[in-house]
Image 1 (cartoon, rainbow, N blue to C red):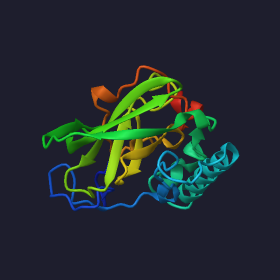
Image 2: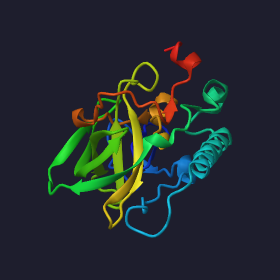
Image 3: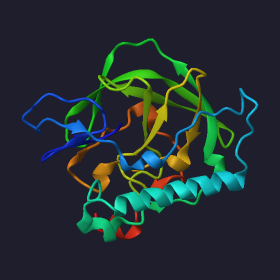
Image 4: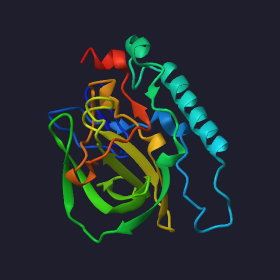
Length: 233
């Protein structure tokens, strides 16, 4: 839910029509090509279903990445066809199960609309849903989760940056999307963290992580920049 395409026949993942502005014509729903990526609830702590074996988990993530590459290669959007050779296949850190951890969403009762800055200079209206609290490699951490005003309330959007941002990963941060559930327990899976589409295509508008989500450690998991593309920027 973290980006909007601006200009032309623009698209928004938000799932709602946005009003006409001087910045861009009305946008229409854009369903991301990464729909092949399933964001499931962590059930190991509260059900009888055993967690994936490490080999199964690695195979699942590898298959999702291959499917995403294939979907991007078959289309002109979000990566324009002329830039396929530059960006595809996408670059990733090695799959590391230690970056896949359960988290608990601590809800916040805050109706305040947060104006999240974006790559275009405009702000996106977000509401804080809660704080995802988890432990990563023995270190307790938390990330604010948001829902964009006027969109599906059943989705959570997490934008974060870390000490790889700007050198190994996109300078403005990366995203994770989660489906809300009634248990309050989630998969915090940095192996599924992805770079916003404005990295590939400047016609997209991408939100910037809030200060609370700027992690003070390197997160070497998920999508990263391609070295040859980074050197050109």
